[in-house]
Length: 300
Picture 1 (tube, rainbow, N blue to C red):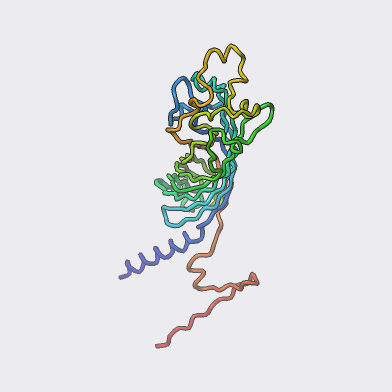
Picture 2 (cartoon, rainbow, N blue to C red):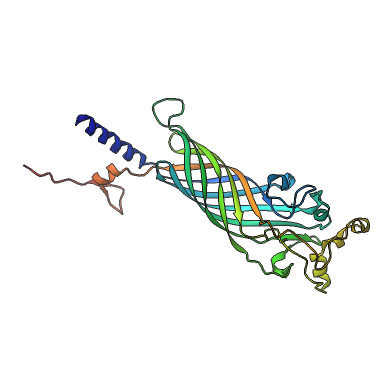
């Protein structure tokens, strides 16, 4: 019986302590790239890192709030400002290279994910003070983004969605599936430094404004030059590859566009009140003073 009471006390104490450190909020900064119709080497479009161009790696910055829902599960809401870019001039695939298109896209990304901790050490250095720790996790969830691809034409960045380049008015808002892995170190119970790799699978093929075929000849001189960029190449280059013209293939619509980033993060852990504290003390909403609630004990 004594062992049972001791066990219940230990469980209660651990629950009370854990309840004090449920929330943390922070910022992250990292590098971003994308998988789409622009990039790659001599092969056609692939959903693999070999299709990325490291020269077009750009940045992402964001903020997040995280809640420890279960001992091994946390929930996170994050917002990221992400830039992705691409340029056909960097590709060694002739079809891509002589398409001569370029783009940039500033994405606003909002994601809700669940984190499962597959490894943790809550007492780094075996100090028995439990102030420093380490956790590694995998995650997945659902998110949304705002997209607005632009291309540099005649010295200016032009919003391509306004022109329905391929005769299709694609949406600026879409859904994605974020997933990946990460880890973080906790110092003095309050400060966390982390690293994360995050991949976003989308359901759109127009993050770079390229998917299917060129439209029919629009007639307008400005749009002709904006849509069919081979006209910007030297005459010798145009003669070397003539597979780009009105109504012909412009991109690969069999693969959707994805983007990914690696980032470092800092977050601050909020110390809340334990369940033990909340049952014994009652706070005044308008003051910082706490009033102890007396419990009436039955006299037998």
